[in-house]
Image (cartoon, rainbow, N blue to C red; front, side, top):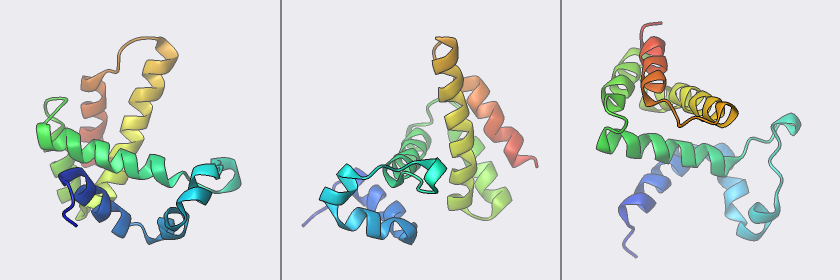
Length: 120
């Protein structure tokens, strides 16, 4: 079986997250599961989709400058995986702010937040 580009990316991030393997192994159970942070169950689908989102953003450099910002953060942390987890915080904040304000997502604020993380 030949995997598509997105499937290859997903497989890589799944491999990097063995803590989710059990949740992902049983498709029927996973689709019915409730992943509540309050219960200490992060949502593996949300987490992995954020990795894919960040990887896709970097591949097309959209918003412009995100590739360089993520690369700088990864270099600073010595790990692309760790950098992605920090970028997720910025991405989540941008989405949350957009939803609360009713305004479009602010790509510049997002990139600035990632850049700030790279300087700490």
